Image (tube, rainbow, N blue to C red; front, side, top):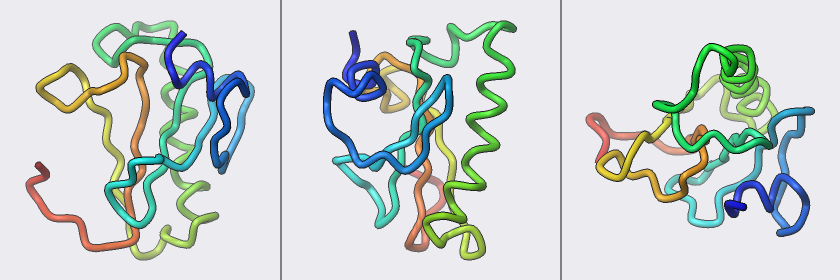
Length: 112
């Protein structure tokens, strides 16, 4: 099991901000911005490149959940960034698809 599966299963504590039947959102312990939330499917998909048509609804719900999470955290109006890393060169550190929601400060472009 990945660390994210363990968090989603309640085996590892986390600061949960949102829960749905098939995904969970929690504060990142290695935050890269004042607001840094990870949105993670409960069932492991290693990375976006390994997702298929059967994951379309889940991915859509996860992306749409960013709006409500941003509102709950007070950054909907000021803005937030959504990032999905795919592979080592993109900065993927856990082989479990996840969405980063970053906000709370001006974010530079291009990133990294």
